[in-house]
Length: 350
Image (cartoon, rainbow, N blue to C red; front, side):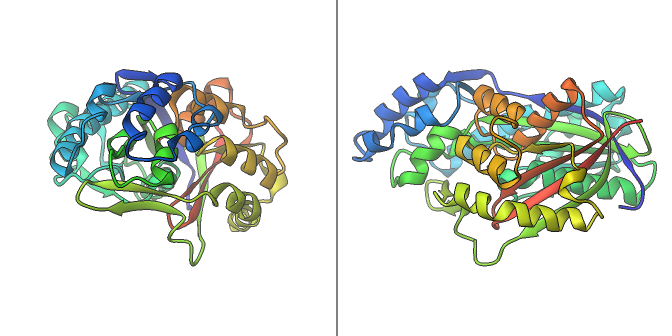
């Protein structure tokens, strides 16, 4: 990255329907016990997931009825656009800007298909200029928030003075299925929630922090670890049980390589800000990065309060970390489909 990029603001947004984990387990039992005979053997995942509450775009009864592509897509277009406007509006307010000040919009979302894309659907409500550059990004999954932040930073650096808005929206709950289930569907029902995050970036110093680097790592022959399968119902989750051990065994060497490209070592990082994919993933990251049990406290808090929202989740963690006060050097990181890892390096604002 040629010049530091200021992270001017960061905001999060959640949908209106809150579900406790106890109620989620009860609903899952009603929904799955007849279509997934081994549900009771899987049910402890609701207790071990580390989640107390999560937010969803529809009331729980909506998910109890079988839904196909048209209904799921209609719900996605409405709710994802609303979440886009809510998160982006708060980020603009914090930065003291309006939609007309934005030169480029990067929209990250992998839980629905929208053509025209979400920023176009939000165009009138946000007051974007007619010449705003639009960059919709699909397929990054849980890594999308961090990768999107790195991409938005590069775009800001490439055009000094331009103001870039990043909006990350995921509506994971719409992938809940009532038939053709496997174990990954039960785990997903125990983990995933909905949410959005947004931030504003521009070249220069100041703001919340300065983005001074980013990196990505893609492992070969890992396509089946995480992603979507697509059928007549919609998206179905691919979520391999090997994710925590894979993270434990592979994250440290990948992190060392990504940091080395920025002339940094593990000892230079004051705080790793991680995507909390689940309680076991958090533990695996603490072990792999030699952080010590319990050090990823903000990660556990976000997981407990919101569940795994996929791409926005790491930005929810970053928001808590910045409110507590960021140290001199932080690295925001996430694992995602590919199988991949991504990082953004933040320096404390002067």
